Structures are given as C-alpha cells and as structure tokens.
Length: 169
Image (tube, rainbow, N blue to C red; front, side):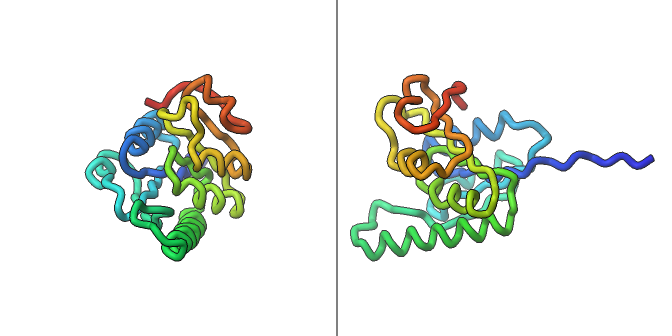
C-alpha cells in the first residue's frame, strides 16, 4: 500500500531590510517543517547575510519607493515595475499564501496574490502602536488582505479588520 506524503504549504514571505527583516525572520522561524518557504526582497535591501540563515529560495522584485524618488515620473516608474515584478513572481511561484511584514512591497504583493486567487496576510510592524503606516492604511482600506495582524492590542483600532494575536519577535 502506497502512502502519500502530505504536500507542504508554500509561503512567499517578504524579507526586506531593517526591523522588517528581523520580524520576518522571527516569523519564519516559528513555522514548522510543513512549509516550503520562498522569500521576496528588493535589490537594495541589505538582507543577503541574514537570508543565508534561512531555508528557502530568495527572489527579488523592484522597490516601490526610494528616498531619491523626487519626481512623479520616477515614483510612477518604480511603482509600475514593482507591480509587474510582484505579479510575475506570484504567478511563477504559485504560493498558497503571500505573507508580508511591514514594508511597502506588501501592496503589490498582496494585490498580486488576491488577483491570482492566493491568500494574502499582512503583519504590521511592531513599531506601529498609535499611528498607522501608509502601507497598512492602503491594505486595510482596499481590503487586500485575508488576514491583517497588528502586534499591539491598541493598534487593532487603527485599521479595518485588524487582529491582535501577539508579537512575532
């Protein structure tokens, strides 16, 4: 009698720089063997050394915004490139869920996930206690996430549909 091994759940997890990296890394560490992890970052995010500590393939998409974006043309070009890359990545990986922690690439990734019939999960940064982030406001207003988690009980009131279940750190 042949027994089938259950398929692993495929997760595409954002892995950008700074505090978002450590929050995403902590979240990835809580997932068990039942998950196949793929990571998405931007070309300029300083995560390569830390990404080597994680099991899974690392992919890149264009950055949504940069500090040097001072013209409408540059901003529009970056946003369009990021959306294009996100759609292609979600299509090619075909994850069961896209999980984003805090960063602006969550907007194109969650939109791509929703339009391609995938689950989208957003975890707001632990630094957001009393003031919402622009990314969080966009995602909650447009209802681009199946789950929207905050890391402080007080932050639940900042976003439509936000849920507090603890911290990831």
